Image (cartoon, rainbow, N blue to C red):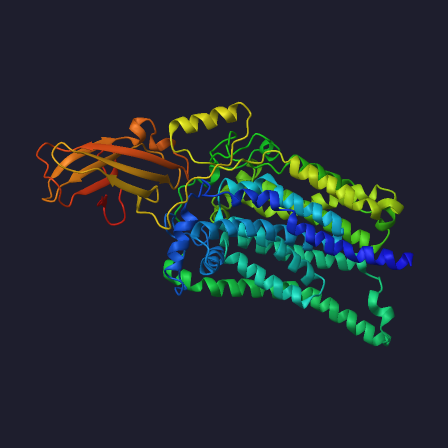
Length: 596
């Protein structure tokens, strides 16, 4: 009776941890349930490009190029937008669809991490690994600060790719198929990072199969005792499993690359390779102290050691990873093949995580300069930290297993849930360097108040901006400023006053201070009013706008005394550089024409 109860309890643990994995990310995605839209660094670009896709769903060569330059390797690809488009077809608005994809990415990351880590670490340590993965600061910054649509979706996909690679290395044909689909999906999400992932996965799967085979050499096949067969049959089965384990990862990897390339072929034929970027790659290496620095926040990545974006892996993540490096498994496990294979897995995870972190730091700057073609796959070197996330999370789960192994064996099963729950609470509550979501900055007073709150150590409220439209009225310059809305008010006439209310959005860091011009054109084509000013009464120069920031402004024009009464007035709106008089382009024009 006691034996049957114990077996039922052991059987229930995987189901319980899977259910908890669904609930675990709730604190991570909860801010997405707020009304409106966050001022991500990507701004409204995911919404603008989703609208563009909805208008061209049958175009196989579509690429997200609204407000951002096309780049096959460094840019976004179609898969996350297809997921959002499916939600649009189900009745969701553009804003809701984009936010749902962000939230589903967080949920998928938790579920995939539990599935992958549970294969080696057990149910409860796998749940700790999922908590580490969902709440690590770099991952949260990808969603709530940068608003990197494709990279957030890739973070949700990564654990499933590694899970499939693990299964393929164990000889599972389903794992090989899953690996092929996962690699292809990664290529259709963010190709540059996906190529790095493909190299890592191939090396990991082959090394894992080779190392585990050495660890398990001489061990009997577990099901051999239950199957009545001749020694010849058992040897044949063992050779078959070994062959599948060797060829499965390679077949899945190659199939994924081929499938991904086939899906990208129409895009390449339509747009080519691209290569435009405003970022100097070598200016954005991470300094070692930034990996544990809790002072990172929600600013834009800048050159030098005072970067305003967080790159912290989290103190609790670091502690658990270090703990896992000292010991893994009980002394008895170390004498068994399973224990040796587990230690090999820990070393591989640690080596991959350290290599990726090192490549993102200033220590690797000479290597990047020696091999500049590698930098062609990334916008920033610190993007490799995203690929290190699953390995750090696995090490965090391994650290929790070490803690469990220190507990008395007779109490371990009973105490596992309590101990892992305490570790998860420490991970969630003790995240250092996690950024606060960005809110709107529609006036200098509001921005000053938020800055004062931050200086005083008060948390920034995750207030959301008004929901943006599905498409911009115009985009100025080389994807620099979007005109989100513009509304003329007033009755034009002799000496009349006309008010133009606009909302601008910065699409990328701006280096110039542009001047706004507004012209009132009468029905006879004559200009009867003009205003030239910097935004917000010269108090908000464009060089100070951060990417994704929405700036509201009001322009008042007094018309000439001979302006005609009524008629079809037009209002011309645009930017120019005061020093040269050169106007920013707006599509094929250098201005936007507005009518009441």
